[in-house]
Image (cartoon, rainbow, N blue to C red; front, side, top):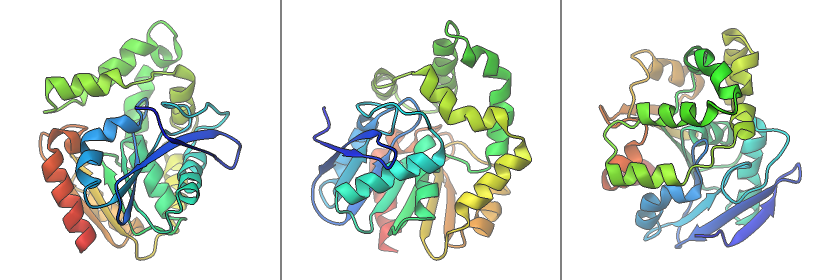
Length: 261
């Protein structure tokens, strides 16, 4: 479905977005190579009680390409859509890359809460996992297969039909993916940790739920609370990278109870 609205980010990038339903605002941000429609099962359920705003990040879906794809400018994409949609204090929800984006946005924007779906913010471990594939990611001929295998490996319990739907929505643009991950290739783990510390420094009392289908490790909850005091970590064992799409009813029930406090 084509987006019904457009806005412009601070650097001039065209950002496509749509809104569904009515009620308190919820703003959804998709994962890398994906697009807003990936959230459709969640939008259908939440739009019965909320106004659900979805966007395509720069370089994804119907939004324009840009020179930068770091968290700062993507958080700016969220800010631009918030302003265009007149969403004064939305609940932010992001999956994968979107989880990192809403985490950065929640530190600097007026939001009601943040839900991060299966995105660890301890990015040093991701750097270590990604580095062996760097040469193949930079190679035009091997890039598509590496991306496809990455998401297959993280599929978990996601059913065939839903996995095929999500895969069909992918836009595997090598320039965009490498732009998003450039920090992973060019910074040390200590430098990446310092960037994350700085990005999360603005959190005060914003309520934050981090929901995983892939266990981030026993020390993650404590690490996150040191950065975001009012945070909760949950792991849905075996759900894989898409716990929200594996069990959408359970997921929507959980976020509604989180919002209700």
